[in-house]
Length: 240
Image (cartoon, rainbow, N blue to C red; front, side, top):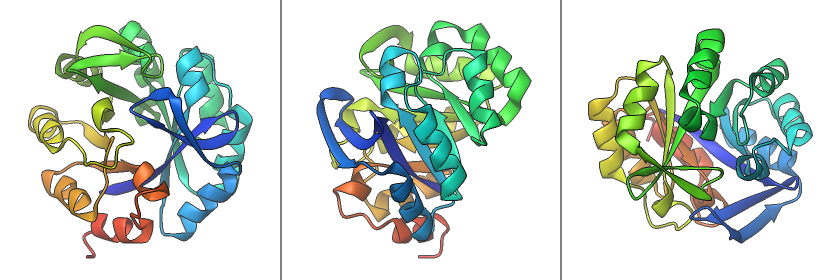
C-alpha cells in the first residue's frame, strides 16, 4: 500500500482545514517545497497535493508552487483542486504531475471525466468527497444530490482506474478514519482505492492495508498528531 503525505495549498502556504471548513484553517509552513523534500527524506515516494483555492473557486491558483514541488521534490505527485478543463489536465501532465484528480468536474460533468480517462488513462483519477452519504463539491463548500456509492460505481464504469475517497466528517480531527466505509468500497469496487480523511495511527494504516486498500493519504496526523511518516511507510510496506 502506498503512503501519500498531503500538502494542501492556500495562497502558496501549507495549510490544513478542519472538516473542510475554510474558516478553520491552520498554516503549517510558508515553504511547500521544503515540506515536500522533508517527506522524501522520510521515505515517501508519492505525495498528494490539493490547491484549496482552486477547489473552492474552480480555477487553479497555486500552479507555480505545484510545478516547483513536482520538479524539486523527487516525488511522484498527484494533484487536485479546480481541475475543470482539459487544458488544465494537460498543463499539469506536461510539468510532470503523475496523476491529475478530478472532483467537482467529475460530479457535474461525467462526460468530461470519461473523456479525460480515455485520453490520459491512469494519469487521471477521481476524488469522491462524502458528507452524510452524498458527494460534496467545490472544495467541500456544497453538497450535491448524488449518492456516494452510486457515484463511485459510475466512476468505475466509465473507466477510472483510481478513486480517492474522503469522509469529510473525519477529516482534520485526529479521531480516526471511517474503516467501515473503506471496507464497503473494497467489497463493491474493483478499482484502486486511496483512503483519505482522519487516518491517524499506524494500526489504521495496517488495517487499511489488510483490507486491500491501495493507498492512504496522511494529513493532519503528520503535521500535528505525532504520526511518524517513516514508520507509516514501513507499516504500509509490511515491514513492521
